[in-house]
Image 1 (cartoon, one colour):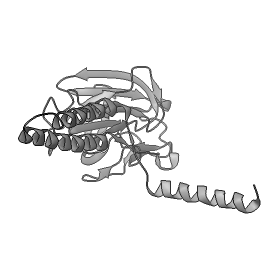
Image 2: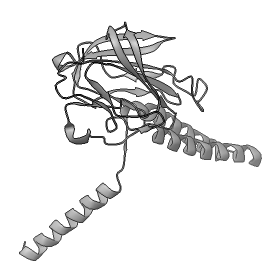
Image 3: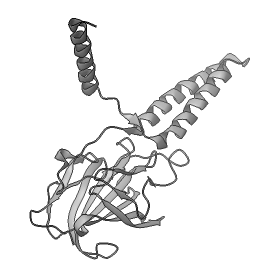
Image 4: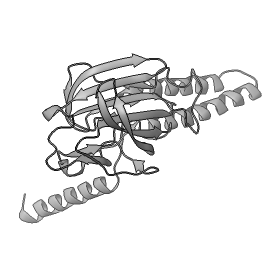
Length: 254
């Protein structure tokens, strides 16, 4: 291979990389494939029925159902999308959003008795059914606490390096704009990927929001040495939006 051909191939690869970066193609998270495949199986069934020896009106009905199934499968794939996320600058003192959505409230509480056991900031994020469903760790650490309750949702307590603690709670969003009824929607608000004793880095996937569910994610962080950097109404992206930071000299969030 001569020098000109090598340059041509290198240039082609560079152009392909630039196009790929300009037009990212989000993956579908693994948890979504059973539902997507089920939708496509229904599409195949409806198409098969539309080709049987039924009266024209019945065949037309099955044909319309197959088109509706294609649309439902596309919406399902979109709702389970998993775009690439990277923490901003990999700064160790940043605390990132655990979920995609909108900041509903940022408020101090005198005591969070469940895990932090002291003064804390409470940050509420509302996620709608078509927001990115992947939930991520706002700080690195080890899962020390998991509590699952039907009414109160699921709580995950994490203790990181230098005793940095935070608590996540996931439950069905009472401030929802729209959500799917059961059995179309998932039966649980979240599916957790984490378990007690597991250690993960910052913005690691810790779970996925249930299909068709509007979710309310609550993050508790200790008030000490923590600076809030977001405001009510701000849109968040899990693993990219910085909610706050640990103040210089604040080695511990306890």
